[in-house]
Length: 205
Picture 1 (cartoon, rainbow, N blue to C red):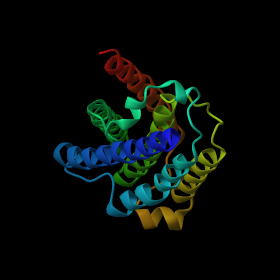
Picture 2: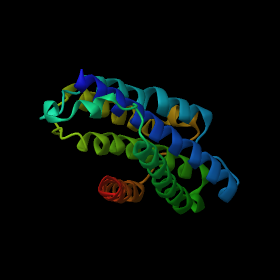
Picture 3: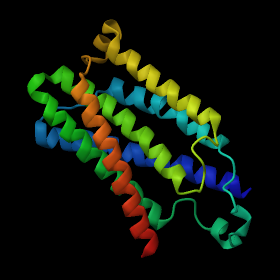
Picture 4: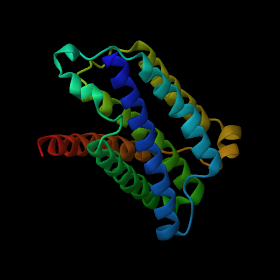
């Protein structure tokens, strides 16, 4: 029962944090660049495929080690606490900042390439968020095989979208270059470190 409670909390936090970020990306891109980096088709793809599969797999997470040592009061609180709301909004803001930086860097090379870069960046950043959330529950990386399969499938499907011309044309993007992957990698590391620092600070306070 305690494991199910945690899995519900992880599921809700993951999807809400990602959706907050997506809304902020679209809003601030319109304000700053007068353009939309994520089309309706992209957002649907992200939410149904690249977010949906890992989110469902979260429900198969094992219970945290030592979960029976916690006070019962921990599991009698609301699903989404005040601290979780703060963390979700802050993640959305970080996701927005890193994504729009990648969009701005690629914009001189063409709108379609910039969209492809930010489209892929959002997918990767949100998958990073998945493991950030799990890391706060004392779970090992390989404790949920189905989750790893879901993440691998999400990445593979995203690579197909940006690599196969007919599919890329359907989404209105171009294949991204090696430097874009470097930017995405750096952004992923910074996102992980900054979010963990924020989580530790909020927990301390």
